[in-house]
Length: 76
Image (cartoon, rainbow, N blue to C red; front, side, top):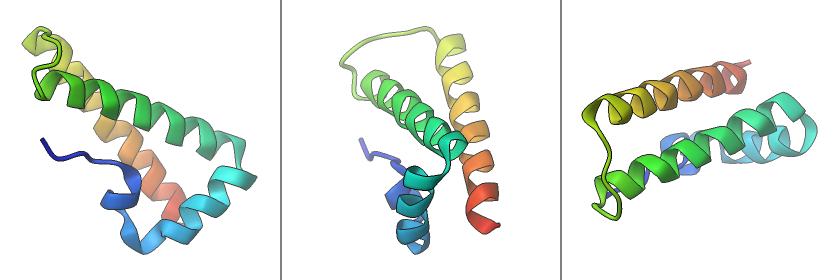
């Protein structure tokens, strides 16, 4: 299964991601939370663990919300 880390999702913002991780605490929290949720989704998608469809839907919705918020910060 393909991973969806932020550097793959937004390669044009690699430098800005690094800068914001080190200078913006809120961005750092979003970044860390995104990676935790993405790791959990990958774990379920790869079959390493199982979960309910409802839980997977909630995780994916959370991932999308975080990604949107991160993208908004990257554009500014």
